[in-house]
Image 1: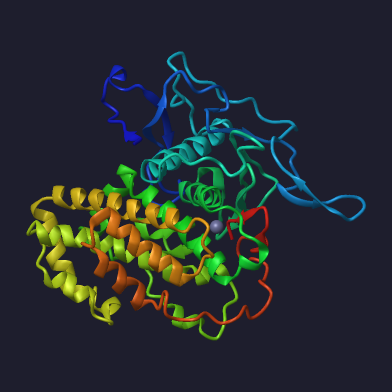
Image 2: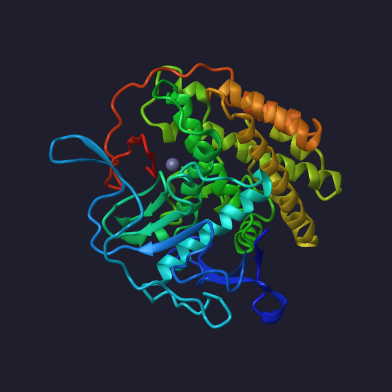
Length: 438
Ligand SMILES: [Zn+2]
């Protein structure tokens, strides 16, 4: 697993490639500069680009069309896919010892290094839980292309690529998605799903398929963020260990401290979509929320078992009105325990992350060849839990899915064509060759 490098540590102690990344969007209040990270890739094995055995980054110049399907002169749809053959920025080179942490954020080549480093970190972390993942496009190209471009107002993943454009002027913040860890990990999540589950026939690409794809890509990003030490420190410090409070772990692609595209810590149920749905990202919310609840409950179960917090905290979580319940009374319990020692909270979160990661990985593996539905996902998750923890968290999973109607409530029809994205300024459409961010 990739590790955080203590800045004071001697070089010789580490064999991995050193990079620097922003664990959270760089423009947020209180977000520090890029932090050091050591990847599980041998120093000296990464070529300029950066380019490793699984992926390479490129900053394209003058790319006006996103990858995907394009219309040719005769009106036929033709695929436009990597490799990028146009102009590009000179690739960043490793230093004499094979590291990339010498790059400064104001260097235009920093983008390529950052995007590659985030994607490689997320891939290595998830392969630790999933086992080796062979790209679904490997017969077409052995390596993933991570392309940074200013010709796209979105981010997307597809056959052989992650393409990272710009988020322009959202409430005064324009930023390249190449600097957004959540977005990169989310897009990588789509590719892991395509690689493990394949691209199903069109008839199977229904509401459940779309919602599950989006939700699981979010879960991939959520747990990847939970493996970043600065995020863990920040989350625990801000919440005093009560993870149900809105915090960095629960938010994706954060655009400002008050706005987020998707919130994992939500109380959305599939019951809200009985009469129909308009957007798969909204339909994904109950499932993202359920996995967030599972992570938090496994974390709390450990804290209770270790005598750090009282058991009524978990009983309170079973209350249907729990959203309201997680207010004031819990604050004191957590802040008192947190003031005594932070260490058990760190340990409990690391354990919960690993257990949830293994359960999610088993769930994804269990869905191979199966038509995706909320019911099949619940079954796969319960089977995965049995293999990972022998039924110890089965009730947690059952309650979390049931509370949101996952596996029991039938989702209504698509109510209208999906509208153009209002605040990212691009279409939120499903792309047969891949998935757009929003
Ligand atoms: Zn997506």
